[in-house]
Length: 203
Image (cartoon, rainbow, N blue to C red; front, side, top):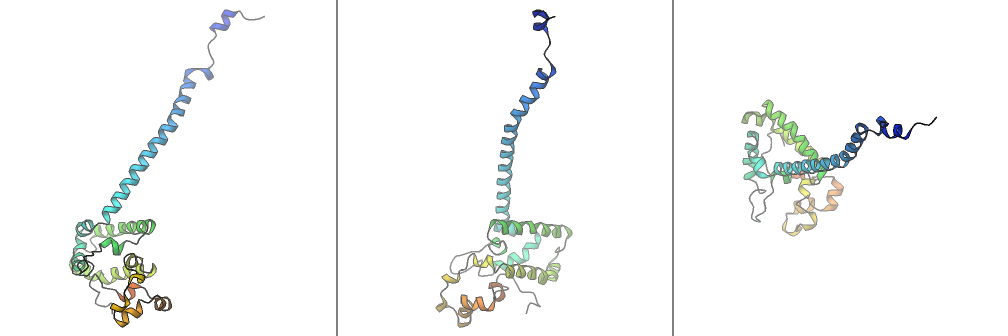
């Protein structure tokens, strides 16, 4: 026996078709593009902030005023040819201590976080502490430059652009690419102490 038409029209909709089930599905579909957009905005903001912070950490202003440990090397740097020279060219701390390229530069800045921890522990709290660790710190930098074939140096100095006739005989010989390929030497092998005082036992 068939149900009357009135019974059909007054029958309640099932839960699957009800608003309590339909609304979350609608909000979810709306939330996917909204969440993607918010993630995009946050990602751009984070990337921009990170890049700005990295750029600022590479400035001479930051290096000369960020912590008291930088006072000694900064004053040494100011007396070097990298700071004052007849060409009016000035290399900053980052030019010598941050390798070129995004990934190598990023790794170097990440290593700097270890230096912050040492700062907080007071490892270089006094000039005497700095001198005690000078050789250790210098060797770390020299090893890094040796490992990457003095990439920081060669980012500014090019063998192809050198005028060997204006160099001394020994310098011209050692800057010859053929000699360098045979000897395996790199810039830092001869130019230690170019911007900072050498440790007493550096040879």
